[in-house]
Image 1 (cartoon, rainbow, N blue to C red):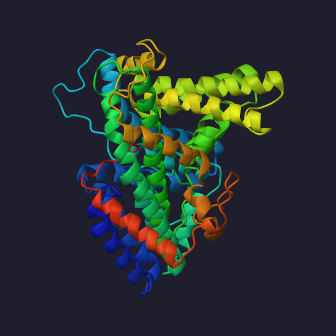
Image 2: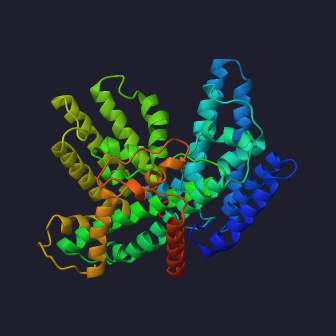
Amino acid sequence: MVFSSFTFMLLFLPVCLVGFWLLAHGRGRGIAATLWLAACSLVFCGWGDPFDLVPLLGSVVVNYLLGRVLETIPALGLRRAVLAGGVTLNLALLGYFKYTGFFLTQLGFDPNGPGVPVVLPLAISFYTFQQIAYLVDVHRGRTHEHRFADYCLFVTFFPQLIAGPIVHHRDMLPQFVRRVFRFRAEDVSVGIGFFVIGLTKKVLVADTLAGPVAAVFDSGGAPGFLEAWLGALAYTLQLYFDFSGYSDMAIGLGRLLGVRLPFNFHSPYRAASPSEFWRRWHMTLSAFLRDYLYIPLGGNRHGRGRRYLNLMVTMLLGGLWHGAAWTFVLWGGLHGLALMAHHAWRAVTGTRLGPGGFGRIFAGRVFTFGVVVFGWVLFRAQDFPTAGRVYAAMLGANGVSLELGAISDTIAMLIAVLLVVVWCVPNTQQLMRRYRPGLEPAPRWDGWPPVGRWRWRPIAGWGLLMAALTLVALMHNARVSDFIYFRF
């Protein structure tokens, strides 16, 4: 089920909200509301394919039991053994479903041959990482005993299930355990505002760009110079508004249920260095890779060479996490090289890209955005030949043609406008900062022009705008498309 589908918006969500609000105000309201949300989340996960529930529920039960075992074992050595076993089980589950076909292909076998096909279950990449973090933190003594219903809801909570954020038990479980769910007008207004803005980004922007992007990347032909650049920029913006839209909708749905989720997206194309980009793009994944992979590998504690190696290994594995293809691995390697170049620059010059005068900020943003755009070509291409055709055209190998090709004048103008938006317009959490929409305070808007009176407020003007955007989005929502991160 997709957040932008009519089934979700007109059937699932109203039933879920009404049931939740009724139970949250009735007798035994805490546990009843928790069980209701957990049941709704399981329905959400199994709506498209009930088989998706099998690995999800199996993973939830096994990891909960492992967590309880880790809490009761006093011997450090035995705890480490149980933790290693739990992490191995989680990675084995993810590896089987996500990488079996990839490795069979590398070994020369046909992954579509006789036998039961391996289908990637919904959200397995996210709930696997989420529960690995849970086991590690239990081992470190950062969590305490809790009920199975709370843990089940922590893992399956539908607003964050299919594309993040990757939430931590220490952030979410206290919100479920306290059992003080209640209807609050501010939660509803902020939640609706976030959801509608996210819906607008997804339906009116990201889905509009999907067609031109496919025309450049999937046609099999050799695009022209300008056509290739516009196709790459169109995908850069499609992915931005698709993921930003999902992140907004997740925050909004959480607030409608009285739950604050961590921010997962913060205007990443305004980043002035590769390091800053990864602090703004898929923020919870970046934090997971840093805390549970980069730092355990040694981080920056063993010299400059080891630091660069750890960065590269982290980004290569982060690329492979995104998809079982060499294009994703190379995409991760490209960002690993960019991070290494950034740290090397700082070590040699004593300065950094980004913070500083206008010239340094501008240069940092141009460099970072260029790396990101080139990287997204690999992320979008089905294979290396496709990426090679697009790269060759972007570098002028087919001549410097200024023909738009598959990109219409309207789309070219839209791309120009959207670039101004992502660089010069505050994001949703900054517009609603006063109401603390997420788990942590939203950063202030530090750009130009100042937000001033245009900040979001629960007033008639904003209400009419939200209603108009909802109506337009519904009218243009004839074909529901998955979010790009839907089955990573």
